[in-house]
Length: 191
Image (cartoon, rainbow, N blue to C red; front, side):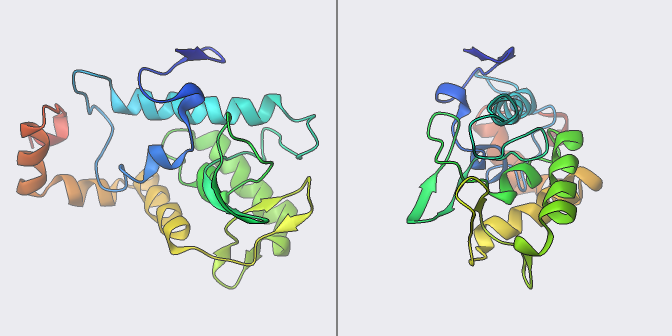
């Protein structure tokens, strides 16, 4: 299907939570990675852009969303934990969503990083980095820091910056053999 002008070959409506674009790709390099279903860089980029556009276009909904305040994925929420997405929006932003998407949407992710740090500042930046989630509409800020959300931020920013983790992981013979046996093709599997 196509949402906001971006085709999404795989997944649920609007792509679902953004953790789909980074958890599997912390080590697996999506650049040039294809199988019979899709090109995974295109899939991940479009999924991220759909999430971004949803937030940007719903800026007037009272949640404070904007082109600098976006990112829906699984996170703590005021009364528990939920997998937020454009079709399951509870008004909570998880910094890991926009920041771990840096390889797919560098300009949009950098705008979010600057907004989170310079505008929201000490409301969400604490001793262990950004809090897990927050809601400007509900004036709620999580007190939690989840490693499952902090880790991908660092890894995906480094993958955007240098590709280091992708290079290390994709250089393993077992990974090359496994992905090839599963039907994946990538220039990174031939090196």
